[in-house]
Image 1 (cartoon, rainbow, N blue to C red):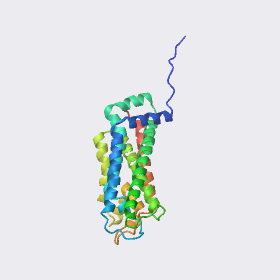
Image 2: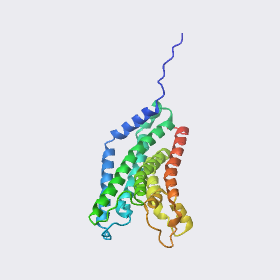
Image 3: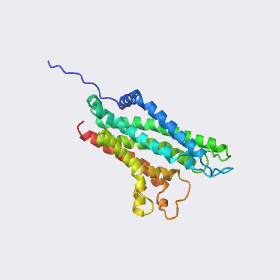
Image 4: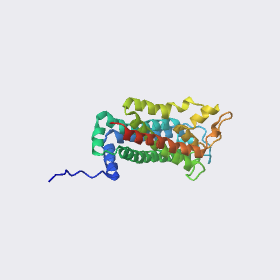
Length: 267
């Protein structure tokens, strides 16, 4: 008579989501980082709006440089991409990833569970930042009788695009973390792609403008923009639908490569 050792049933995806959420929530740095980021982003909105001396007396067009100033949102891009990367590279650095893959051999499912939790968390952060920034700017502009409702043309699109900016960057960082598996290398690559690369391409020539328009921050700038591009600029070649597509393709491509790599590569 042979004895068989019972094997544990495969983990359900819901269990993976719960485990990844516990990992994220248990890090003391996570709530502090998110809180300080939101404080800086919304605070930069208040500063930008207060220093805008061009606020007219009476309703005006939506001015995204008040509600969504570059200084605050470059910071949000940087933090979201870095935190998304740390979701993965911190486990590779500590060796926890070995324990995880022994418990759950389906590595692709692990990556997808991390991506789902990361997307949910940073969508909440992005929504809070976007809504808080808009309400803060409009509260200040109301003192000049220049506040606008959310139904004003261009506002809702800017609100949604800004809310989704954080999860898009976080997922790109996560995908790069799986591909590179090295903390410093992943951080540098994430910062370079999301923050440093876009300003290197101008809109003065077609090839440069085409490359710029495929980058996440440039897509965000187009989605919140309510004015025509400057004369001589090729900003008109960036369409709203194309910018939404950039939002979709960057996390989709990086996560697809991450899942394929995780399945084929040793820990």
